[in-house]
Length: 256
Image (tube, rainbow, N blue to C red; front, top):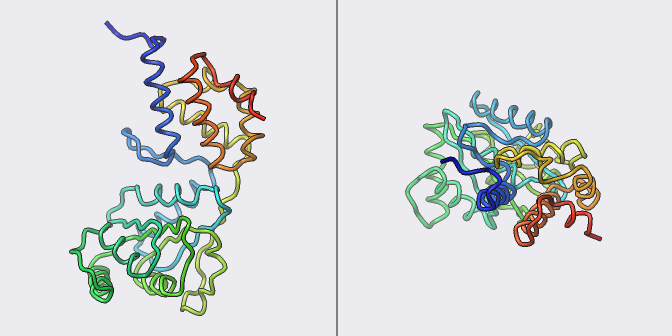
């Protein structure tokens, strides 16, 4: 006998699944589709992938205020399927650490010395094209990493996400005309789309959990900040799991 979707255990499972989706809304789903929260990101995503498909060279910079979704977007980019391999390096502190992360992502034999790591990566890129995504996270760009990134951009398309990456003097490192994309806060329609897509992926209808009043309150509290939006949604669902009820509205409306 099929289990009723109104069964409390099923309800809890669906909400837990939704919490997982809120942790990383850019993940790959079983149906092979990708979660793209805004048309602008969809356009940037397609433009970068076209660079990799065409095996172009150069640097792509993705900047934005803290909480604008840069790190999530970096993981989204590196998770797609391409004929060529993709490497993802997260929060490198030094050029040597960056080399290690990229080489490990590409499955290259491990060595400790920076010169050997660089030599192996350069040899790999001479024989095979590979896209590279570097997410600085909370780290700041230093001179050694910047020069390495500039050098790698002579062999492939390198995507660099991080705060104030636009401000680095890339021209002095031989990079001319780097592509620049600035991530901005979400508008209300984007927020609604995000929540609707997440609840749909969890097998629910958005209106059954997030009422219009709750969505308006969520947007006002988050001020369009993606990180705040997802965090508040997560807290609301956790409160719903703990206290019962049918929607997140009582918790959301009760926030100062």
